[in-house]
Length: 191
Figure 1: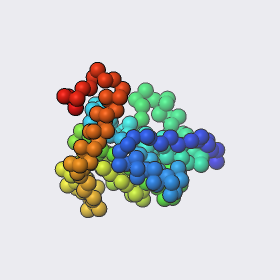
Figure 2 (figure 1 turned 45 degrees about the vertical axis):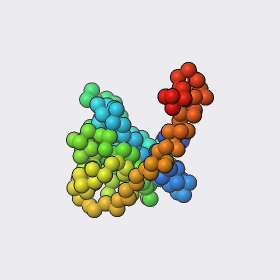
Figure 3 (figure 1 turned 90 degrees about the vertical axis):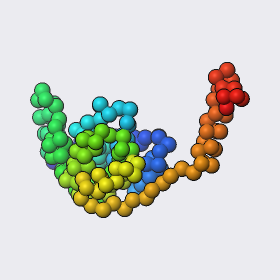
Figure 4 (figure 1 turned 30 degrees about the vertical axis):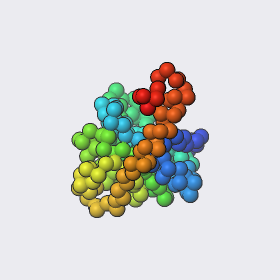
């Protein structure tokens, strides 16, 4: 079997809670543990399920020791077609690569940032294609019933809320940085 060997896995540097979890997983298990998706409510139009699953597949392929010939064949077929990849194509490739990884994780940050139909389709794909993968999701509490329904499981949820003292501390720090960068943009009255 011919294999292509990926060079590296790039990790995000976002300061979100998911980044802390991802960094911990990589520290514990190494880079070949899985993939992550950062959802952005400001970019709902370009966040489509096939693109997000393709991004996950790419991360998994990069962290894999070799790329199976069946995946190469599917990718070549997609390149030759004028339509591009579809969810079924990505699913076919995920079914090949996921069993090869053994222990794997998927982190999806800010799930509530997706448009509701996109979120439901992504969750449905997670339920059907990622059966052996441990999934870590973040999002606001109002989507929890939707997630439970789409995944057809009861989530182990942890609700985290910022304390006023933490918010004040963060604002004081940010305002201080602004004042140091450009004193004309921030004055004591605005502070």
